[in-house]
Each structure stands twice: as C-alpha cells, then as structure tokens.
Image (cartoon, rainbow, N blue to C red; front, side, top):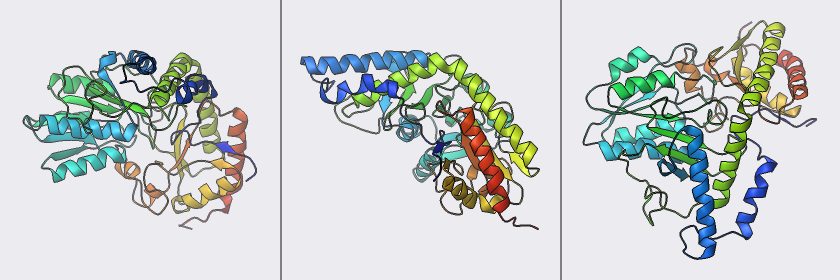
Length: 386
C-alpha cells in the first residue's frame, strides 16, 4: 500500500477528534448508570437528557420522541416490527421501497412469516420511488410505509415530503431510514410528515454502536427489548452514555458545518464525475444526477462490470479504499446488488457498481490521486465483451 486514502465514508466514518473531549471522561470519571439515584447517576442522566434535547432539536422533534438504540439496524427493526406488532389489529399490510437497506428487507421477510403482507415499491432508472404506485398500493389494511431518505448504494435522495403528504392524507404511518442523510442534508420530521425516523452515529464521524429512532408522540409501538423501562419505556437496557454523548457532539458539528461541507463535497463530486466522463467513454453514473447526497458517487464501466472486485483490489493496492455497493450486504462475492437491479440494470451489470463516498477529511489531493489510480488501473481490466 502506497497511500492510505479512505473514500468509503458511506460505510462508516472516522471518529472526529473533537468528540473525545466529551466522551473520554464518561468512560472512567463520570461513569454512573443514568438510572441510579446517587450523584454519579444524576450526572449520567443529565448527559442523557441533554443529548435527547440536542439531537431531537436537529430533526424538529421533542426530546421524549427520541429513543436511543445501538444503531441503524436496531432502529429499523424496531420501527418495522414494533409498528407491525402494535397495529396488526388495524391491518397487516406494509409498503417498503425495493431499494431499502437489507435490515428493512429482512425484517419484512420475517414479518411475512408472521402473516403480514409486504408490497415493494418500484423505482425509476434514477432510484426515485413511484409515487403513483404508492397511492394505488395503499389500502384499508395498510399500516406503515417505509422509504429511506437517501439510498446507501446510489446516493439518490427520495421525495420524502411528497411521500409524507400521501401517507398523512391516507392516515398511514410513514417511517424513513435517514442514516445516510442525517447530518448531510436538512431533515425535518414535521415538514415531511414523518412518523418514525432512523438515524445513527457512525455515518457522521461519531462512535459506532449508537443510533436513535424518532417515534412521533402518541404512536403505538411494541418494544423489542423488555426490562427496566429505559428510554421512555421503549428500549430497556443501560444506556451507552459515552456513545450517546459522542453522537450528540457529532450531530452538532454536522449541523453547524452542513452548508459549507455540502458545498465542498459537491465540488469534489463534480470534479470526480467530470473526470470520469472525460477520461472513460464507457463510464456511467448510477443514481440521480441532481437529487443525490453531496459526497456520494456510484459508477460503472460498460463491459467491465464483472471486473469490479478486481478493480477494488487494484485500488486497494494503491492505498485507496472504495466499495462495491453496501458494506452491510454480502458484496464480497458475486452477488448482484438488489438496488442496481431495481433501477433497471441486469444481473451482470448489477455486479458492477463502484461506490466512492467522500467525507470531512477528504481533500482535493486525495481526489487527484484516486483519479490517477483509476487511469492506471482501468486499462488492466478485461472486458467481458470484446
């Protein structure tokens, strides 16, 4: 390895050093259990309460509507299964998009085994959900619609405001997985009529193992964990106070720096894509050209889709970390991406997506080096068609 350039920020991000000053004392000095009544517990409870208030304010919610979890997967499972189990007397129909994260899709498969009926929303070539299909799919037994705010593989940002209006007008709950978008683009649960929202920490330069689920006040939801009744009685277990404090600080930094960081990342993305199209006539972008996350690019090369893993390894040898699709899926073998297939690529093409995601610590020099590495590596690949 010659360099050490990390361009896989959609998978996880480096912990920002600015978080350490708030996290470290909570490991060995202010280490109390927030449920304890003594001064150590009160200190921890104060940290927890401030984090509820702080993060809730960033999405337009109230502190009591935010439930801290272990991360995005738990929050998504909590939302899908918890709403289904608490509302099955109203109906057994759930609608999700066909490009959801695997934890949503697998939770839905489990619910199908429990007697629920799942409708999968199609998307167009850019990854935007079909709103007319959604309107037709909602029926008297529909209890929940779940559509991610922005897709983790192709970066497309969904029309959540329109989805929220449709769901609210039909009296159907709306959940959105915002793990990729929170801290990167504005998120407002009130404006978007979102009833449940999943967010997490490690995508925004915070610690791993902590996330949250927003649950609009008054919504019936069945807890996944039962015990001492922490987190407003919805998520029993001793809270991860250092992680939660780090999450709150990470969110604060992202919100404060969002405008300038969005502009910077968008410029880097444009430089990257402009070079791709100028240098490689067979390059194409997966996802929406305009409605996409600022630091996110998913691209392929016509005819070279079968060489994706080899290209990743060549880049890794040059010290550059990128990915093929989602880091949370089985992308180490020959599996085709369900997201790329959903936007119309055939199974062969759906193996060829390369995801490059820039972050806070990505520099223009990093982009230049990566583009040079691509120029060197792509000619070494073998086209399947010649």
